[in-house]
Length: 404
Ligand code: F3S
Image (cartoon, rainbow, N blue to C red):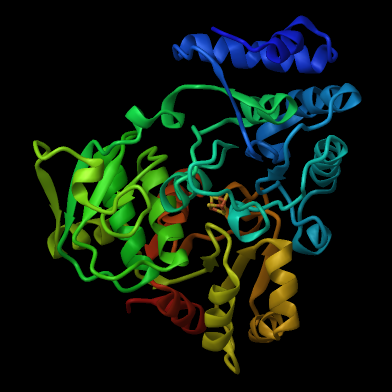
């Protein structure tokens, strides 16, 4: 691999052991994927920052790195394992929480921005079209590649850390023009209206495309930011999609011809296909738990949820998961009070899918508007899911049941 003089100095140890080790990781990765040079990245969004994922080995590695390295580019942190402020009250175990706080502090010592969110683009890390970045967290990667048109592979914790320490990634995968074309064409014949509709389409597309690049044609109205967020999260969890295109609405796909060849025949997403996905997530009866905010809710979603619960009393537990920044805004606007008055909880910094407190609560069923949560809930927590739109989720929380 060709390295610039500066990159060679990093690899030779001129900037210390952590920089040397980081560049070695990236060179090895580049050689595996056939990269012939490095690319400078503008910023990093790091996954793997939850102690549940990193464990003691990860904590030791990051603490060691923080002794002699600082980040060369801005790095935001993905969801961590706890709510940093309310962990005791919510019931996170003390030893786990202390380890998480140690891990977060080690990242921050190197310069990390503690967004603790899977929606960094709502929290101050908003790349520009065409910029090279190094992001992890599957839903965020799908968003930044597809909706913004910045360029990243799906980084893991170690490679994101190495990228932030060196400011580089190897040039392969979605950094290169030739890998950003569509591989599967999906003709959408359903009139998509709600967040759930986009989650259902994402689930369908993810199963079809796997780790490749689906292209959607036939969507009639420009999706909202929140709908794109729901689509990408479901695509990235039902499959491993890191990049998709929506003809007419995402920046690399002004026309179908820009992103996919005429020889690829479309697969139709019609009402029958929609209903088939819904059948998988169709729990009926008592609902113990309702989760909104996978990916983390925006301020507009907060407003919608607050409006739906205002003056009501919930009969299921409700989690609204978000970043602390968005929560602050929601608090100032009175939305937090509305949700808490109805009996809902606002959970910041962390991720309902990887949340170690869920087992203690004895839930059996979950309602969610998230294709990602619905996909993981049975396998990870033995929770039977129903996939609903936001208004239906709140109705299920008010009634304490769904579909009876
Ligand atoms: Fe975010 Fe966790 Fe869902 S990281 S997308 S809330 S699985």
